[in-house]
Image 1 (cartoon, rainbow, N blue to C red):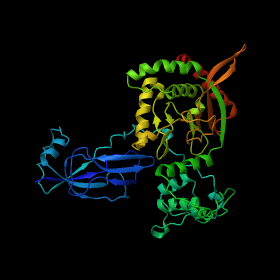
Image 2 (image 1 turned 90 degrees about the vertical axis):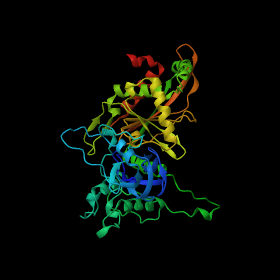
Image 3 (image 1 turned 120 degrees about the vertical axis):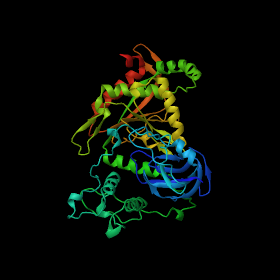
Image 4 (image 1 turned 60 degrees about the horizontal axis):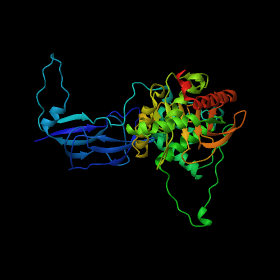
Length: 447
């Protein structure tokens, strides 16, 4: 007779209330060790929870759409006693006598192993936190005193979205405002179906008029992907809170591209696809080291700058469900081949929707490349709390005057958007000029 084993949600990082989007087993199923039990989705990442033991599923304690956190019960397994004993950690402390083996009817509690992609960071990085600053759309100080009834986590969530809780009607006990109430308010406002915000202060976001498009012809409505919903809210908050300016420039990458082409065969022998991006990332780190204001973030009170001594670069990846920005850590400590290999691996997981929360955290500076598609320039949106983002477009051959005659040179368009509260125009021009200098002769990174 087997042992009943309770399986709990393992450590999933700094996230709580993660939605269950798939239940991969049901009561009566026979499962193996490490077989996926459920799929969770939080922010832009999905993760599968593997089984710690083999056995038969006796009962499932969750439902689709449930919000679960570390330590919550997932299911109960009926496992083989010997197998459980073998998998259990050994207590080598001689001071205590080992307890007797559990009876068949006793229930053992185990925690499922952490999902493979999710690796817990040793400490939370400064760039991981969203600054808890007052929203710019309204000024609650202008409102007659009234304290909305909401928990600290709901207040933080509302601040991140720029929502004034004074405008949200709570559906909880004694009209307590829940996270779902804030989400509902945002959806109604964006759809034009909610009540227009009251003129509370000097700032107010006007509502977009609601239009019945079917009056003018045939239409089809499709829901936005989860990634686009989440990134849309974040981008809106960044655009409204950050005073954007974009500096445009060009870099001569003729010699660098020739060097890359020479190295492609050698990289291919190591099963590495050598793209231009690793070289660009290394050059960006060089520019960040020379101009450290670009590797900083404003404190929540906007009174100081946090200077980061590490160099983690976010790279925008186009996926079937929308844009995600996985972060490559410690770019300054890695070679071009290592960066190329890591980029290929993380980009593949991004397109499969298998990024872990840790893959999206800790960025210092972001790069968005449209060179593989086309265009000559664009204005990327700063990924706050970062203070700058680099956009690159398709390189093209141009005639460049060398003082005596025109020479054909391969020129790369650069579009640097920055937070004007931290960076001024002169600094931005210095950054793109120095970055272009590094890209024109990558050997300067060795000096």
